[in-house]
Length: 246
Image (tube, rainbow, N blue to C red; front, top):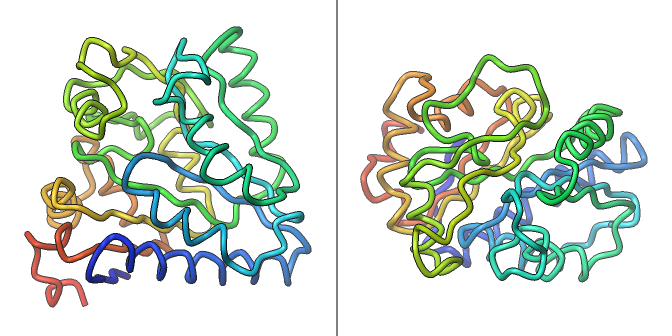
């Protein structure tokens, strides 16, 4: 399902309402809920509205999608820092499972894998990058691995996006590697919501919707999920005819 809104703020508000209903449904059925969150400029409005939703956060467990290798949490681009400032410090979660790209990477991946596979994930908020990536699964993405998390090399366009969003001063300052949740693990979530605002994402949205499933546009894999909803604003939807997808 594709939904288009006027701007990022309206998109974020409606995506937060939609996501809240999924979480509340899981809480009603299971007594608890599990949530995956992504980061970046495109997710800010959704998170801003999500923290204000009437949800019993004390029964919600959150998983973190990706993090740079060897980047301290004190760095402005740290995704741990991003989520703590914009989400976990504002709601009282049952648990928050952060990815650290420092220290023993193999141990971190092993422990995260054990945690995320204890029970199904009810909702994953998964953005789409300017290069069509999901998490840090840059093209050509590994669609075959059955791992939950792994270390990846970041491609040039991904690094340029991080600079363009203001997280790093130059491409050379962007870490070369990251720990990311795999495409396989993302698709194991019961529901996936993709919030993709802004003009800079218009080409990626067009490529995602117009191409068959291909690891050259990793986000095309989301179309194979039985419960995927794509939230766009007028700018990110500007290169498609929404009537073609209704």
